Length: 322
Image (cartoon, rainbow, N blue to C red):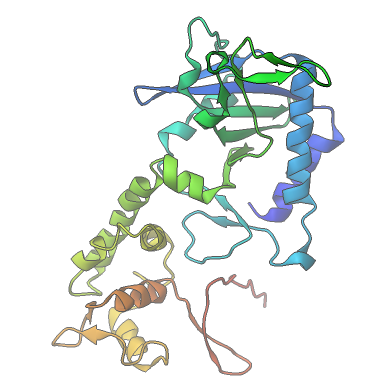
C-alpha cells in the first residue's frame, strides 16, 4: 500500500455515514481477551469524530511544504525516513495485536462487565469505525495512569465553583492511535510503542536469523556467526530481516563479482577484509558489518548523468518501458 491508496480508502469514511464500536483488550496471564465496551451512542459518535479529525489532520491533509512528505514503507525496510507509517510485512505478528483480526472477523464480542472483568487488566482499546463495506480498526495502548479509581479520592467539578468526590471509577480514552488495520493491512503509527511493549525485537531477531542462515548458505562471508552477535541491536536486526527474501544481491549476483565490487567501489574500497584466499568477505569490525548489510541491500548507487557515487537510504525501482 502507498500513501495515495491509503488516502483514497480513508476518504470513504468521510463521504459516507459510518458508525463506531469500542472494545477493551484485557491482558491476563499473558493471554489477550476482547470485551465490547458498552458506551452510549452519543459518546461513541463523539469518539468517532475525534478519531476521524485526527486522521484527517495527520494523514489526509498533511502538507509536503512542511517537510518530508508522509510515506508508507515496510516495517522491514532498511532506510530511516522520518515521516512514515510502517506497513507490517513480517510473517509473525505480536500476540497482543492478533486481537485485531479477532474483532474484524467477529464484532460481537462479550460485553465488558466490572463484575466479571478487572479494569486493572486493561492493556489496550480498539475503536472500530465503518459500515458494512468499509471498516478500520484503531488500536491504542492503554496506560494505568489513565485509570482513575474512586477509592483514591479524586474530585471533579459539580458546578462553577464546587468540587464533589468522584463516586465511580473512570478511564480516559485518547483520540490518537498507535496502530491501524484497514482492508487487511496493518499500519504502525508508533514504532517506539511496538518495539517497547509488543515483543517486536524478539520477532525481528527470529526473522533476522533466517537471513543469516541464507547468507551462510551463499558462502559470501567466512564468519557468519558475527552477524548473530549483532541482533541485540534492534536497528541492525531490522535491516537484516528481509535479506533472505528481498535482497537484490544475495543469490542473484555471483560471489566473485560481489568481491570485485567491494574492492573497487569508493565507499567500500579498503574498508573490508577478506579470507586468505580472497574468495569471501571477513567481517571483523562493527562498521564492516553495517557496510556489508548496505551492500546486500544494493545501497551503493551511481548516477547515470554525473557518474557520481551515492550511498542511498531510500530508492525506488524505476519501471522502464521499451
